[in-house]
Image (cartoon, rainbow, N blue to C red; front, side):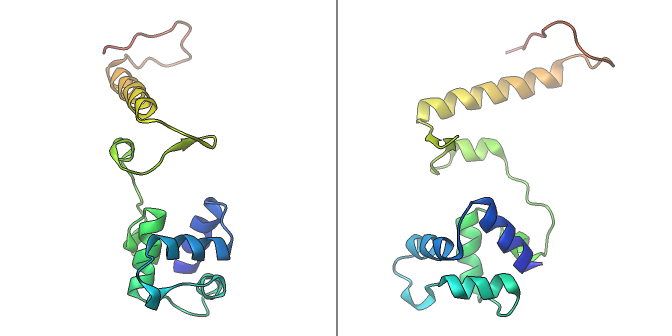
Length: 135
């Protein structure tokens, strides 16, 4: 399970093996003992070798997933979008960084949508008029 999840996460970020190695090494510049290489990550993805605890921890941190998800102990990798908006991570949309004002506005839009949707009547069939949000 680990090799497939690692490969899917890496390809989902459009990273090469070497690119992933550089990125996780950059996240832990003081940990020279556990520096990763592209060929090492390729061996993990092919199931030839298994990373140690520290290496799995670094991968999980980089991809922002749990170690349990990465190693296949859990299927659920739910992430609360609200937590992402208040995190210190740089958020982008179509390659453009979002400012803190953008993040706040988008958060408010999503919150209004979810709140309004939960209070809207649920009739069958397509809607022909625009609904109102109860903000």
